[in-house]
Amino acid sequence: MDAETPNQIVGVLAHETGHIAGGHLSKMRGELANAQTAAILTTLLGVGAVVATARSGSNIGGNPMAAIVGPQSAIMRSLLAYQRQQEEQADRAGVKFLTLSNQSSKGMYDTFKRMADQQLFASRYIDPYVQSHPMASERIARVAEVARANPYWDKKDPPELQQRHDLTRAKLFGYIDRPDSVLRRYPRATTAWRRVMHGGVELSPFRSAGRRCANRFADPGAAQQPLFLRAQGPGAGGLRTRSGSRRATAARDRLHPTRR
Image 1 (cartoon, rainbow, N blue to C red):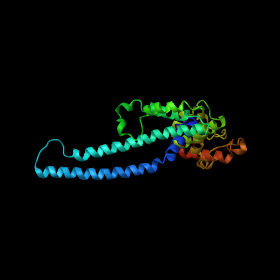
Image 2 (tube, rainbow, N blue to C red):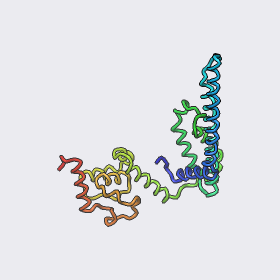
Image 3 (cartoon, one colour):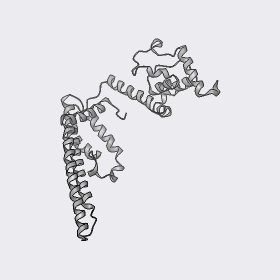
Image 4 (cartoon, one colour):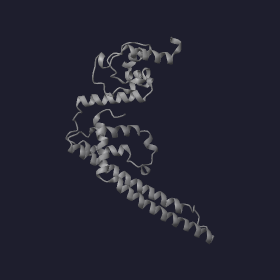
């Protein structure tokens, strides 16, 4: 939903393809198995040390549980470091795949830049060594080196693809968000909303999220309409029919009985 261009989505897919090409899932399973084995061994050794200390009656000071907790923490940090390394490898592989397919890597860069902006204030309270992914600021610095070297950096998405992307985002916002949030996001849809709520007989094609949301709110049957409304005109859903108007009026009356 945050992706503003198709290229940003392609960048994410390229990153995930890097994970697949690198066999990271199977390698991580092996690392997890090794970590579990090490965790069991260190736990047994730690318990043995605590029991031996208790039986001898000696007091060497400190916390005996540190013999158990300390190694466990070290194993976890080692596993997370390995996972962060895989993320860096997937980033570089993703840029490589984008270059080989004649696509810009700017979308991937913009995605990481947005993540860095979101972590700007919280990053000072985050321990980077207990994270499964690299810190966004460090990540974008590494990616920028290879991403800007992409010869297709300035390549734009085709206008028709960008239009389909914008329309899909609008439809998703219209179906998922609250009506008031949709109308703030797409203020031009306010007129369509008011027409539906007051039983208007005509509505332009539902090309914006607000109109889609208004139609869904007043006419439950509208959810069966296709995601992309390519056709236009009264016969293709451009204008509401009398039956559609009656359904809108009935829905309005159910919501606001006092308006009858």
